[in-house]
Image (cartoon, rainbow, N blue to C red; front, side, top):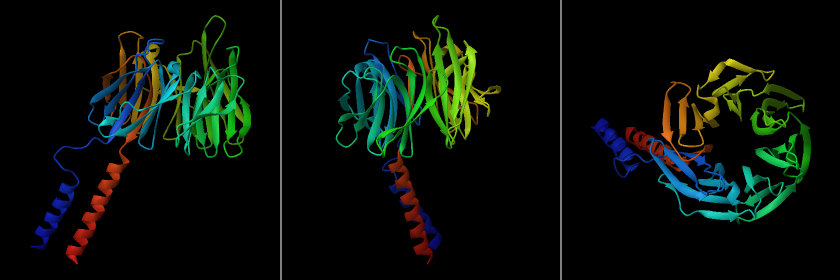
Length: 355
């Protein structure tokens, strides 16, 4: 009789976790589909845990970057000079969202630390921040160049200066002390610093620049914990993209139609490549857990996201909006907390019955 009652209690607890037989979505993958420059047809596509696709259309002119923070999605719309904020739920995004004007600043990339969203700007050549309490925009620091990527670690911000004020290639990465409210250090790295990624306390930088004939050059730089700098240039028209990634403490560079491991000398280990797509169509890459996300485009009809699982090798394909760029990922922590609470409740009920 006691066994039957225990089973009944378990059934009651698990049944109470769901009001119906429907499983609630607990994950979203967001994709910034930039759209055509000047056309205001940028969009946000989103894929839930069941592979169902939804979208928010006509977000603005060049949907540049995304960031998930505290169940909100922040969206930088570059040529519309605005930041959008949406509440996230298992059902999607709350519309129409909150719109913040950045005053013609041409915002690019962002990082969040405490209650501030810091973002880089090309027109105003500065770092600004959005106060996440009152949604006001303020200038943090003015710069002599065009800042691109930005990342936070501890009490510091790090950002790349991709081009000088005359649009020639820069070679600077700057660290900014948030507590002291001032530039901490300026590092000279390879030309055209773009994306940033940490491995422990070492900062890795992807480099892309062009000569006077618009030939492309790519490379990688590293600033170690002792401020030693390593630079490598892969040469003219090397088959690289602009991103760099840390997967399980191994660094990868976007190259050869996938991502390629780089060794301690920053050389490309071509035999250690994940993904095999047409390099000219690989516009963006991001990672989340065991999945690698490739944004592919021919700048015309083909606009796809390929999700490659590292463990199984399986590839899922989704048709998305024009020019899929940045990615962001949301997990429903509230649902996970509810399930943990349910399991804990079940354990205590069973313990009481057994006692």
